Image (cartoon, rainbow, N blue to C red; front, top):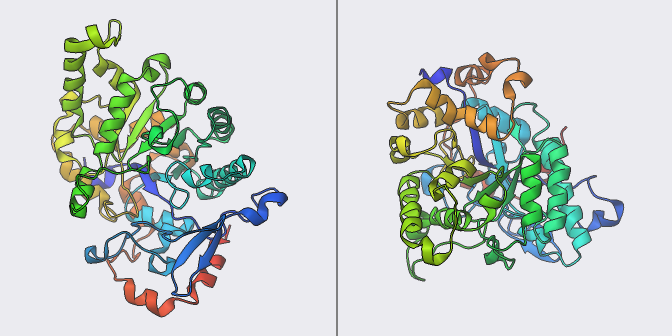
Length: 427
């Protein structure tokens, strides 16, 4: 397949929330309690909520910067490419990358709304989650029809409230919700209990995919306290492998036969061994562990329910005969350091050798469109307007060069935050 004829939908990107996110979206009695975007004396930006300063507003949002500047930054908006936080600029960056659609995870509220879940007054917490979700669906995803897959925050502190918010946002067109890869690490019951059943049922009833992103348990794999950060980065997907084991051996997937769970940014290269291992384990041990899959194998249950997602995984694609190719989806991860922006089509193509055009289409867009009930072709007037070549042609000449933003950041601090408020308030 010619790279310009590909259609690309990313099921894992990230938004850096703009300063005016909550403006006009809260009941009057809660308006003064909303998180506030602030500029510190040293020029760095942060969010202030309930007396807590959230110092890093754009964790790892390094798109467009040289690799030597990658890290657990930026800490100020003037270090960011505008596409991180400005919806119009984001779409232009997507066009330049040949990417049609995008599902965006949150930044400062954390992956599954841990920030708001810590709010003591749960009425306030729910107001914040609903305001965030309305902004995410109506403005971030709604400003450019056909370009985004909404993925709201969960009201994770109460399964009944959570289920209600899933149903509310589903009525607004959201067929995804972000959730923790391991809620027990956050202090709630595990998925092995029936505590979350109202949530699973709501997602099943409303055809909402549960997206479990790496790091959404607020815990990372650390081998030893003095291990270099390279160990942490290498082992980050292991959180998703653990989540997969929890899902398979819990009653959830067997109890809710229509439920779909996406293992976001978890890769796919590990899946063939995992499937072999769970079936081997079941054969050898289920007589005494008490597991009962009836006339199915654990691997069959996995393949019916679990959606797997990858950025760049040549080994995983090479192992495709052991995967359910109807459940494999591609990710860009813009604007984080693992992202393949602005050469995502070319990078992905390097991994697709030997695949049929049908398999390429399934990975690059058809599976995402199916599972998330996403129809960009109708919204944009046909597939011919949605290809890599068509999108890139729209923004020919756009600057996608790699640039240092450290020097610019120092020069602009003190004035840039005012400009940002103006930019982010555009309709």
